[in-house]
Amino acid sequence: MFNPNWVKTIEADLEKQGDALLKGGSSLSNIYRGGAAAEKVTSVRPASAGGLLQVNLISGPAQYSVLQFPAIIRLLSLLILEWFIALWEVARGVYHGESIFMELKFVISRVFVCIGLRELITIGAGVDLARGLPIVH
Image (cartoon, rainbow, N blue to C red; front, top):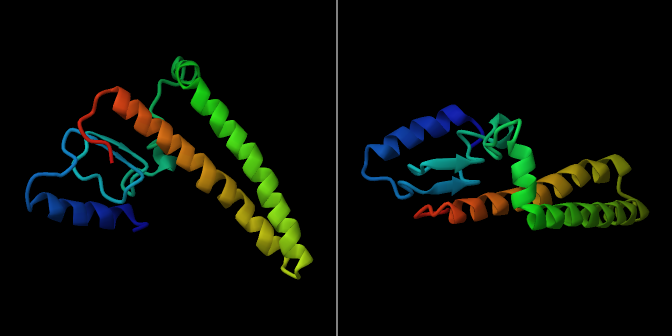
C-alpha cells in the first residue's frame, strides 16, 4: 500500500474491531501501525516524512552518533562493501550484454534500501528495546 490515505482508512476499520495488537509498543517498517505508541517507517508515516529518525536537530545527531557508535560503524562498513559488490555486479551485467543504465538504476536502491534502511531499522528496534517497550514489531 503506497497511498497513506488507503492505509488510514483500512486501519480505522481495523481499530473498530477490537484492541490493537501493538498497543503501547513499537511498529517498525510495517504497513499498519497496529496501535503502536511509537512508529517508524510505516505506510502512514514513511521515512521521507521523518518516520525513521526522530531526534532533536541540534543535540540529537551528536547523541545518536555517540550512543549508537558501533551500529553506525557497522552501517558505514556495510554501505561501502555493498557499493563495491553492486559495482562489480554492474560490470558483470554489462559484460553479459545488459544495458549499463538498467544495471546502474538498481545500485542506489540496492545500497540504500537493502542495506541502509535495514540497518537503520535495526538500530531503531534496538533503541525501542532499550526503552523497555513491551512489544517491538
